Image (cartoon, rainbow, N blue to C red; front, side, top):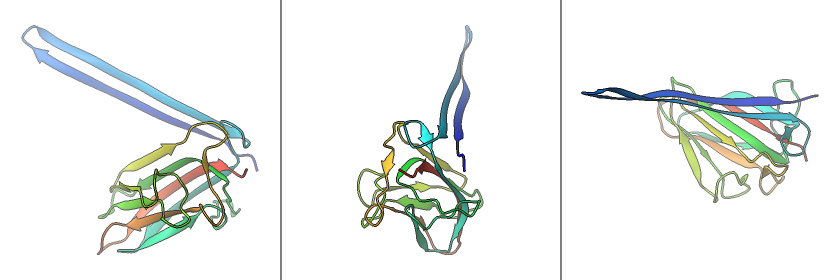
Length: 168
């Protein structure tokens, strides 16, 4: 099953300063493109996972990147290397979606066990690992989990997750 992806980030902006002598402006135009082709080498992927998930109030879940994820085509997405992780929290959420590296069996996407980040309502966090062949190593049974948690009580949270990587 061929798999590839283009990740494009565009940033456009205008900075203006108005003075008695006129207006000075600086136009910002920056772009980043990462094209990932089919395979397991540098700049390549052969595993893809996407889902929209909901976590109950005060709840959490561990996603297992070495065997329990099923992609939208009902194939198991077993990762040996993770190259892209995108988490987007629904704008209608009341609480944050906290993404952490579990102390036991965590994928080493963050510097240390229990490190993580909060994804606020309407916010998207993007982790694009270096485009070499290594990526972030996923090790079955000892380094294959990422935890997603609802930061508060009262309401559930919904988030989209996109993971791209390799089987070897």
